[in-house]
Image (cartoon, rainbow, N blue to C red; front, side, top):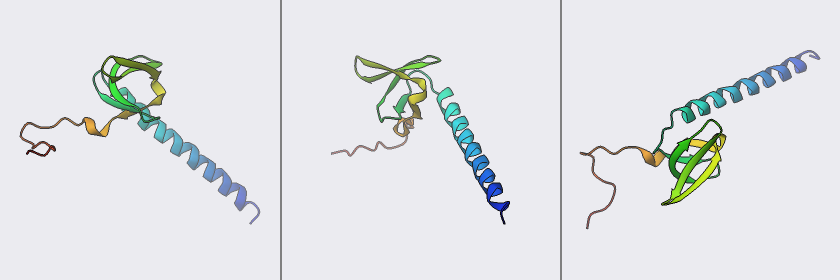
Length: 96
């Protein structure tokens, strides 16, 4: 019973390490697929259009003429509302 606890502890640490590496790979893949003009969201909740993507920094236009520079690692990915709408698909806006 005494050797079971250290073995369990090591197993938990390996699982935590593996899980965080897996999440990091998914995040890196999502960021690498971004391109100029994509609507992106940052970890702090800022939403804007991607203007420039450099190895360390990204420039985002949050309002017309207002561009901010953030760390590339602070990007969460593409905004969920940025899905292109098909022409034959009805608009979500109500018509009067």
